Length: 223
Figure 1 (cartoon, helix red, strand yellow):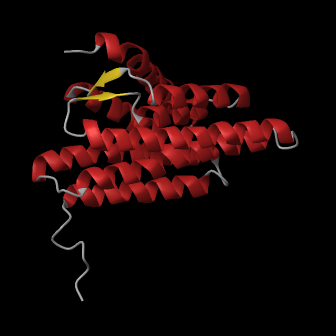
Figure 2 (cartoon, rainbow, N blue to C red; figure 1 turned 45 degrees about the horizontal axis):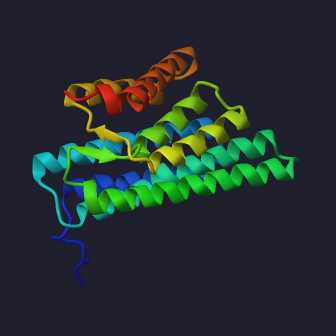
């Protein structure tokens, strides 16, 4: 019996499925090591960018946009939300009210990511711009923040709430130019593989680039 996906999925879809698997691994790791979980989320973000490159090189499939959004729910919705919850539980473990608030905001983050991805698949997937903060960007900012030591729960919970609101906003973000995506990918890769002070430095660089695109992208990034 031949699996149904044979002949229906392409190389880019395989990369996308890998992105989803990385999202699951990151979700599991939030209960073990939040820094390692943050790095796996960043690795999933690199896979998310790679599937687009592969699709342009080898062609996409009709299932591609749906697979992409489903994978992104795992990697950039659920995994970063669990990352925030893990930090909250570690820092506020005996404060039930604040932990409930943190979990509630994380749940809103997931819901916002799901809605944003559904709207993207329906209306923006064929465009060179997108409405609302991309889920990949939101997850990258949260993960890079954890890697550089921004683990104050109020900061992460507040940032998660802001990201949830921005994902559902009407801000228009153009796609990154190839050279800029390459630079960000290189910094991201070094933040993943390097440790200690060097890794923290690249994580700061990644956070700086991501925040720059977050604030300046809608207004100043039209090339």
